[in-house]
Amino acid sequence: RGLGGVIRDEPLNRSALRLIAFDAELRGQRDDALKLVELSNRVSRRDVPTQLWLMQRATAAGDWKRGLSHLNIILTVNS
Image (tube, rainbow, N blue to C red):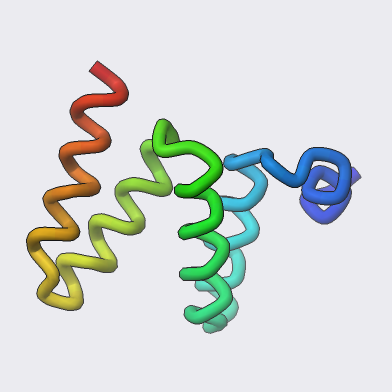
């Protein structure tokens, strides 16, 4: 069925959104990747790979407060 089919059938599937986002980043489409990861984050904050991606992006941009916020989410929702 493919990821496109999953999104069509289950538009709130956080894992599928994340995987499409990661694929977009690998293809150099960073703006699209960010939008999809942020959408995945809005669907559910419990997705650790999404939180890690957002944390890494924030700290790479020097936004330590935001990066630590994502780390806090990881530690609180999965403990």
